[in-house]
Length: 198
Image (cartoon, rainbow, N blue to C red; front, top):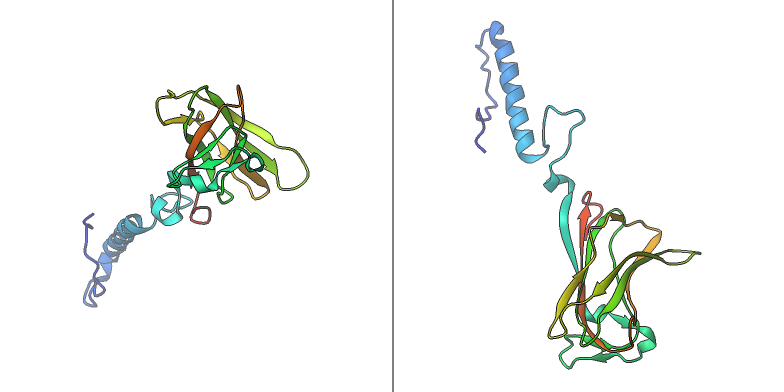
């Protein structure tokens, strides 16, 4: 944006009359406000000041892609990687780790898969890093047509990642033990600041 007044370190001149000092103070305040809002803060008149998103690191809709190589199967049974490393084919339970820094908010989780025959279910799960048991956050049915690859997605979530919890996708054999091809997953998340992002 164009500033109202150019920055001038010689203004006001030494010959300026003292009665005009209030005008120069107002001019200086405007110059500072415009420049701070252009580079650092959202509103210079706010109390407290709030940093611009590009400065604070806040961002909505960041995405983490999880490749096929991160997919694990139950004791390795039934796992068959495609020749080109494109997918994992399995008829057993599968697990996909979600690695995000504490502080971010998970909004959606998606699975890219080919169900081959019957539909199957997968879950977004968590468990404490310590004693305790796992919790099902959301259950999704992958019912994309068996004629090709499809995407199944959770409803909108508000899962805040913390430093004492583990998160992963857990796929099970419901309703049958028939195979499915797994290509990868994607997590959409919001980050509050530059300390909580990858």
